[in-house]
Length: 412
Image (cartoon, rainbow, N blue to C red; front, side):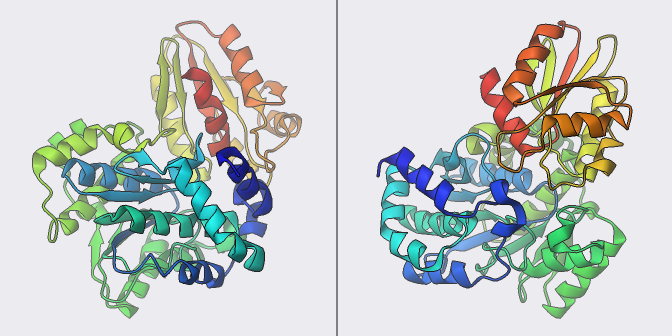
């Protein structure tokens, strides 16, 4: 198979969360361990940083990877989901995994695929570890996919665990209280391994502290660190929610400096070049200055709440336009209450199987006083919005990671 045929095989043959939802979530690590055993356990004997949490995992992971790259280390980065290119998930020093490696890996592991029918995520995790071993990385940053305790990435023994925050998302899989969700997220805390905890509700902190005590894991609190003004000024990510992430990053880097040489000048360079060094997109991602067009992947209640707060602060004389789409299995009623009523809406369906029909979304939104038209694709919504807005207007694109993934290529 060539590269496209290989991708088609992986996307079509393996259960993929963005397409089928929780059916693809495997509640044990058996398949992952089986795949890794077949590959000679490439996840062993490498220094890993494990990053979990509800929001901010990608931003924290990508920033730490950028800092290590600028300090001269060979650093692997595994994140999910990808926005535009599957290869975004697996990279070393900002360079995406080679297409040939993906082809050869899939050919090599196909007998196991046929035997155990792993999920798409399980396979990509195994691919990442195999690639990082092949590239002989010095350190790897691994972002949790969903939850933590039963996530496929939770096969590593890290040098540092990070839990950015715990909030309401994926309750159908992780639990209907913050304590239950925190229990799942805290599953990445390992015996005697330091854990950085970001800012979060007391209910979640208490559960994570309980788990850390059981594991005798030292806790570093991101909320208690002081961020240097220079670091704030150089930090490339400008969403207001990134202020909390930066505290978590500072706490993590302070701990990592106990065993790695991370120089101030290179740290600042790393903070300034996150997108170039990791490809991170979709986090208050300004696609145009005039008219002001911004895309953000915030898709749960706390994430949308913060982006709407930031949006309200920049709306001045022009009109506000919002392109909005969601996935069908998301509890949308609470989220829709956060959206401003003074905007013109372009409701759309993202190009994933789980995408919510735009007509249904439009009807639901109207009950909250959100008025607009429905479009069968993000592309059509963008096309209509661009015909309508003036240079003084503001256009926000969001509601789902997959809406942003569809939109970004249209502005490149």
